[in-house]
Image (cartoon, helix red, strand yellow):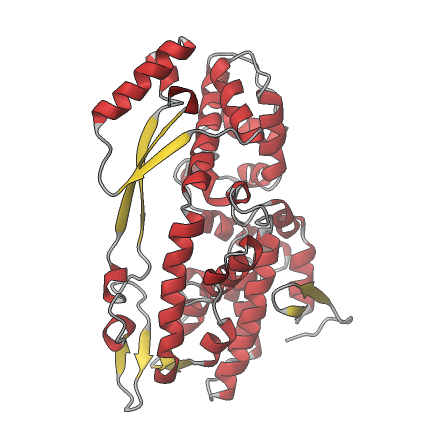
Length: 409
């Protein structure tokens, strides 16, 4: 790798000093596409539950890159050959893996654009940067897409035990103050190895993997899918839906030029041209928050009421159950709010709605985590573990919810 002509470091609250290893990576970090991640929240609206959760995708990307540097060092020490070109490709791939996130991350993934994953948009950004940097990202893109011949390199970037997950669990635990979510990433990385081009975990690291999976399950139900954060995200999705609906009826909506572009245009995967990518690159959390501050005073009751709920944290009530919500209960709440505010059926649906959420801590059928036994055999962690609950983690758990205004209680 080509070293930068100056010593570049970031002071990170999780890992201490993070070293920038090459000129290319420093230039990528300097690029406006990457700097935009400073204005994209890592945890969406979770700060409404955990006030400290204001860290950004920028933090997370640098942290993931730092862990990748450590993983490369460990694997080389164990005799796994990784060339300097592969090292830079890995570091670039993990640095840019989340560059395609939109405002408030996952909450907006299907509101700004139509059914386009952030991974796909990340790839588009990487391809654009590859042109800008004269093909320097070609290997990183191959690794990111899983097209490079050495499969374990992609697994370090995207798998069930990758540097992305290790960093966000440790980082999100730190910033939320949820100590139960902390993992020992360094211990996990020190137990990694490669067998037949596949990433594996040495047998003595099995308890660290168990802790990692249990922690991930805990963080999803306690933090990422917390009912208050869920309500806030659902409100935000409906606010943008209402704004788009009003624009379609010819009403005036004040917001930034970038946000207005996506409110006026329904963008599908095939529509994602260079012009659209440029508009997307100007979109961040600030666009959404400034729009909400204006929309809370809009003439439309639905838009103003919903926007005020987010701005003032006067959210809807939510009930969560392990079984589907009875349609009768939804109808009862809908009738109350319809009469209270004098709304139509269509407008009432913005305030009373039901849905479901699901999570699976471990998927034994896709990119499973293999444990390297002392006799050289590989065994799936769920089968190798003596933890009673680990096998159940591979089953998807569903929970059902209903949201409605507090005024109807």
